[in-house]
Image (cartoon, rainbow, N blue to C red; front, side, top):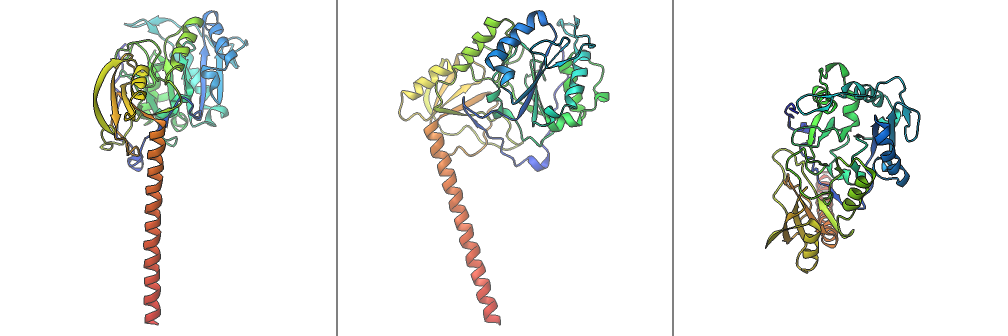
Length: 369
């Protein structure tokens, strides 16, 4: 369905100098998030959510979570018996006209202490495969009034990530009369000045968004949608969990350089490129001693595989809206050590200069006396 354009306004002046650079791997720490979902169709969604809850995966990995539903049954944590959860479908694309249900729930979330105790709130559909530990690489500073844009068309409903600052500012009277929840929520956020932070295609793997996706669930995404049956959900989760090959890789996935900031992709491009899966690209790099990293296209499997060497500076923000740079962990650790050493040297030099200046001032004072 048609969506209003997302306004990618410039960042506030006080954060323009911020480097939105995140190093993440498959074993990253959990971000500071509160997650919730709505069990609107118990007949088809309850078993799917119970399966996730039993294994503690998906939204049930979040530091705090809530499941809203009409009936007081597991896994519902917040029953709303008087709310009509049934929604019609309509419009040009036959989408769910679900704003009334979610408006009530978002209003409740806005007042929940367990939601406001965390820097970001994540709303999920029950049939969204969610890898919460991967989300940290896409989150802006927590102090920003912001939300993540997960599709080239704007905000899509399978996963919605909103900062605590934005939730506190939401004014439900200015959103407009919009029947689709995701379009309505985007309107609500933009009308209170929330900053849209581009997070596609890395945040959501969905065929409704551009670039049109290939493969199934084999790339390093945060969420995959839709996977409506238990076998489909766990098959996708299993495929996604296989990437990367080992914990010996880390990724620069920086899509949010300050306006006018950032450099080109780090390192020296090697004379090799081929269409292969990201995992096969990693294997190719592992087989070559001088290869320090790879560049792959987000959300593509197979992807164009580019090998990289000369990765001696991993400290800057780089502009790459559709690629990730994967670096061997030993290279990452070496560049981090070099950066720390350089920083320490600068500190020593500054301290020496300050000491010299202080000595000179003291000497001058003594002479004058």
